[in-house]
Image (tube, rainbow, N blue to C red):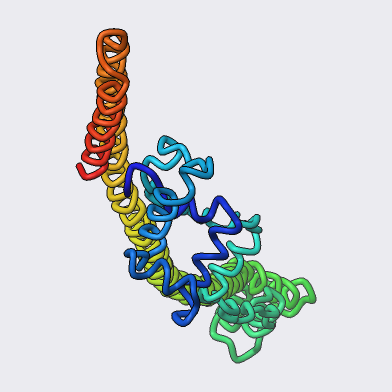
Length: 318
């Protein structure tokens, strides 16, 4: 960019802008034929020619060069992500476990074994069986009683007849009671064993069912955990990639901006030094104004201005 922005000078005045538009768009116009041969091939060149030949004498002002130090780099744009909405954690949890295996219906438990005591468990039944006439126990008890009463001579009395039966009952009652109790106990034990077997069978089936369900849930939870970790890793990788992109863009922009700032600072320092030397030169000329001719004085001022302008132009080329 030149020291003075002659393009901005053209844009500053409407009549000059209109004149340039005519030159630039109509090659057959009088304005084109006048200015183009002088070198007005660009807007910048036209502005300098117009200022040097017309504008300066007419009191037109060039824009302050400090207002146009350089083109600043464009700052990077950052588009913030859309704000996240609230998450229903309960609904999310239900959705996450919606595919979990089901335990299902519990195994069917068999009906317990029940029983009604049989007649063979009753003492009455055992006694009735043992009191039969053909029972050897009964026959022996009656025979022993008859022999006892025969020795006493009262065999044919009613006492002797009833005594035989009583003796048979007394001798067989303990046996009948023991047999009935043994049969009853064995029946109860058989019932207990059957019911215990049914319960153990049910518990075994239930244990197998729960063990299988546990393995299924472990497999499902492991898959769910792997899926969750994979999703989290994917989000983290995407975030890091985007963050790295922004970091690279920021570094590039920072380097460009820093270089441009350094360039502007150097140009400004160069500009200030040139203006300081010009001011010193003019002051020196002014101090000898009374001792030199007017013509020499004017020529010295012009030379100082030319030197200043040359130095200022060299500042912009750095």
